[in-house]
Length: 233
Ligand code: ATP
Image 1 (tube, helix red, strand yellow):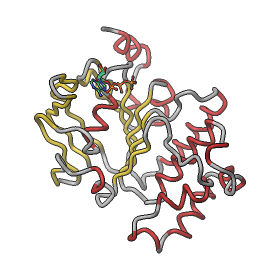
Image 2 (cartoon, helix red, strand yellow):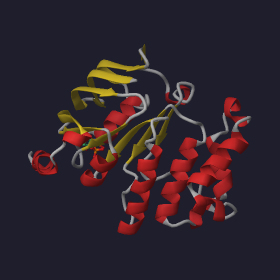
Image 3 (cartoon, rainbow, N blue to C red):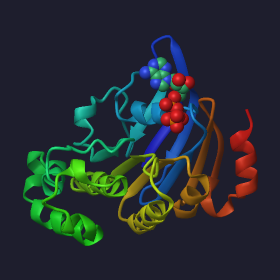
Image 4 (cartoon, protein in one colour):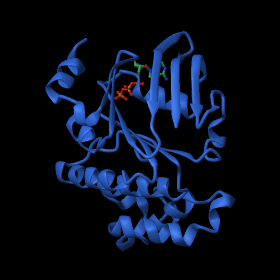
């Protein structure tokens, strides 16, 4: 569904990604793991059109999307849930969800999508009138994910959802990620929680210093080997 080939991108004179190639399969959950600074977020920014591509290509369903402005990515039904959640703190939970389906083409689906979101995240239904700014970290992450789903994306990109969450909440989060991986949507999950990410994924990419160090079906991953590679510099 998403083919990235020989991608080079970075920040002005600083190149971060070196000939990165990935193949994201439709209806599957692909996790991209790697230590701090490996270039995971930079890769996501390049996919979302937030960074210029220096060389290589990014194609979605066979169509090149290099250089597509970020605001147009929702036309291609690509949604990113950024690190740090970015909810609207002064709006209620429900208003945040409605914002997720704000573009005109989604509005007629709003009631059905809202019902689906509440079915998947019952706690958000309980808290629907509460300001997003008053939610716990875990609830805010659920809200960010539910808001991302409101536009029914064909490709959902989730950047470091477990960051800063308590262990019990992390368990809950990964249960939800496993449920989201039902074959109906394509998901890219960037995570530092290696074992958990591999546990919910179909395919695993390990990034190291701006390069792909490993590409493997999740079922074939040997965690010990993965950790050895992860910490190799
Ligand atoms: P993390 O888990 O810490 O977010 P990451 O794998 O997502 O790590 P990136 O954020 O993509 O890594 O960073 C990759 C490299 O790019 C790092 O060396 C970082 O210092 C550099 N970098 C990130 N943002 C910028 C920027 N705005 N300007 C210059 N360099 C940057």
